[in-house]
Image 1 (cartoon, rainbow, N blue to C red):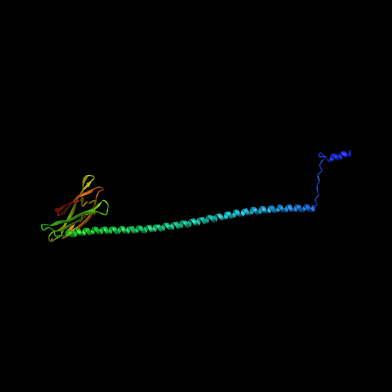
Image 2: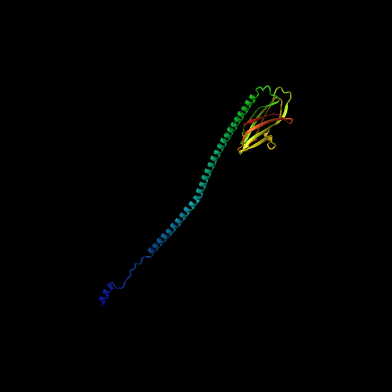
Length: 244
């Protein structure tokens, strides 16, 4: 019987027996201390990691405004540089425009001087001796040319007394300007109260008098002829038609 019990205890189906080793309490205290130290170290490391991440984030957040300020300063510097360049180009453009305006004024002065010289030449040519049979007031010359103003014509008239006049001639000049406008004839009479600046001025001279003026011409109109009439005391003293 005892043999059978011993054999059955050796078999697989026999009851299990747990073997536990009893550690002395100083060793167990040391192990617990080590475990607590490791846990404390792990917690401390985790805290440092968290603080490091926080510092990194705060550093990154602190660097962002600085970067934005740097970009703003660069943008302002670029703006000031471009503004200075624009002012420089504007000043150069003003200088060039001023130079062009001066050239235009000089050209206009030269054109006026040329016209004046041509007028003087015509005037001196007209001072040639008059015909022997000429009497009283004589129309020596009359010219019409384009004016500086668009759609405007300028006229020049020279009137002279023949012989050896003993007194001044006082009178007036009328101009009858025949136009062709849109295929139809039209007439412009000077002087005209609606155009006081067009003239002609009154006559008052002993030997000769020069008259100048300008009158507007409708767009597309053409001057065909001008009748120049000199009157004094209600009578016509001289008249002449000039064909353009």
